[in-house]
Length: 186
Image 1 (cartoon, rainbow, N blue to C red):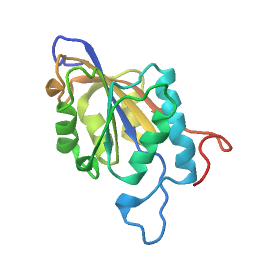
Image 2 (image 1 turned 180 degrees about the vertical axis):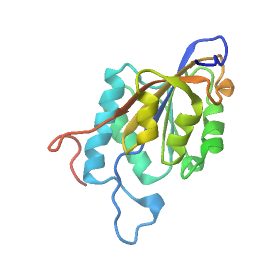
Image 3 (image 1 turned 180 degrees about the horizontal axis):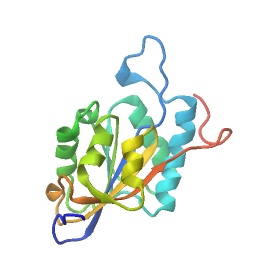
Image 4 (image 1 turned 90 degrees about the vertical axis):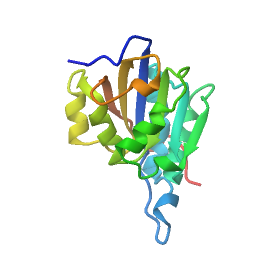
């Protein structure tokens, strides 16, 4: 059973792991770009969020190149993308750092998108979810691959009240683009 975070509007935290990245020789980890599959999957993630009526009011994105490219390609699928904050602390962040960033989101943002990296994102979802619809929680425990999207819902007036076990994991989707569709190489 879900522990309610409190009265207030329904809020959603949408957690998106960056799309598949390339491993070019001599490129530092932070600077690794998306691979061709990632350039197909990131727009698919944008379509999934639009189709699910789960567009964010604000996005928090790691400064790593692969995360920024995921954001750009996903957000390009929407009519008017929301504001985005690129935050260095989200790169290689653990649960306390990720939760701190989320809790600093303005109360006006009822749907917040967090784009970053594993293992931190997977651990954050598992920490926040007190329960899930269907097998979503088991799916995250099994694997949270690149381009995975987890949607956590909870009631609260401010993001500061989001804590361990207070959210319901409503969806876990892995966005995959089709070969021959999506963004072409640079």
